[in-house]
Length: 184
Length: 434
Image (cartoon, rainbow over all chains, first blue to last red; front, side, top):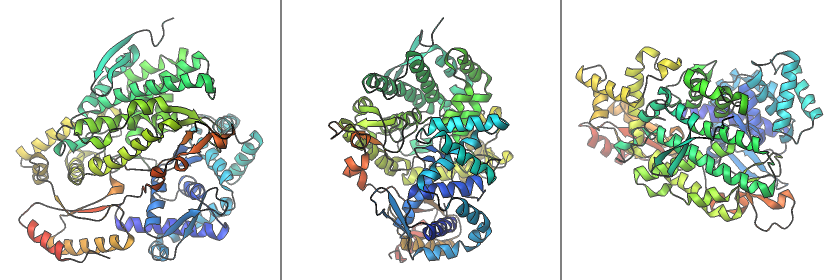
């Protein structure tokens, strides 16, 4: 990754994290991963990640490493959340230069960022885990099933993958994603 | 009815001793697509640094298949008491076959010299950059002999080529079995660390393999209700050793400065010569893709020299070991200021001495070290509650907790020509400190 690209990418990520900060009092890796997942996979923002399925839904380990490098650079801080249950990501002042550097890319993807934050900005990590899982399973199965069959298969598969969610919860989020045209 | 496990053959392996190979697996091994792996070196051009590193993806694939069986058998044995999986005999057999075939075929899509150029040289499909795993799936689905061998298992074991392919690309998530092949404690890295360590002679890659295999267990985590792979408390030290092995092998072998110089040289050469007619990408068509192996790269190197080709100079570098020399590097964990100075100085060096310099960053190297998390099953939990019974490794191991994974070392390489000494003096005189 050359420095120009790294600066644009880290600047864009810092911008996203800053926007999440404006909405949530604290958030960690799960929220960052899922918001960036939706930006790339549902809204087509050109980012370099290859998401695969992991414990809390779609995940990319390079993104995790990039967040840690951003921490080493002093662009963000990753602390423990006040409840002591997870992480708390905080964007630092040094990120401003990077955000400025990525200005053009941020501007080009402004609408996509607004949409993701509008629909998912208020979601708790657990809700994001479910929404991103449904979207991920949908993307990987949509070619093989049609109409009502497709919905049934997706809900069944998500139930198997995430038994902690009830069928009603899965159906509700499925409907939400369909309503905002993310299940096409 | 004949069973998958009725008849087996023995392969001798320097790492694991005798490896059992069942009939259908031998049929797959005997296909030309799989035999090609004998001609793909596991560590690409690393044998130009560690001369013993001539081992291939063929041996690694067999090793992973052997290990996956050993691990799986232990997990099933332990589950007879723990009952997290609670599978019947049929399910146990089915999943064992699935894992063995995934292990055998997971690397069949590797391009020549393994990770050299991966990411730069692969085609894109619908905007998605493909990886060797996508090609593994494509080969499994499109190579008639392999597909038929696997699809024949469908009626008895519900295993199809598509299922194996999607397991490898993780398109069809399987949180119980996936981590055994691809996860923090997976058999893939167990094999490659031991094998790479053995063949390179770099001892850092070794850890107590038997202990690790025997202390793996299924666990539940407090968030995720499905069982997943973890380790008994008694295996924590060997799990630490595995993680440290990855850390040191990355710094000593996978990101070795000379090895990386050859990765960069070979990538450039392959793009400009071998793949010239394919738009500098490996062909998407499986038949054409499978024609490429390490030998085709080296034949092209020789041809370029004998034909006095356009890229003869680059071919000479590869043939006569005239790689660019690493003339400057940052620390393993580069600070933002250090990186800025590094980039600014490189610009100045290029302006003064020409553009024929190469740069590299640890994040672009293969087998990057990443700190991953898994659960430890405590020997004497204070209660039988999930949150007391299983603990995050970072709460059990201070060594793992203290590791920082964001290695982002940067390097500058200069050509070995009559200007090299002058370049070095110039670099020495520059200001690099923050």
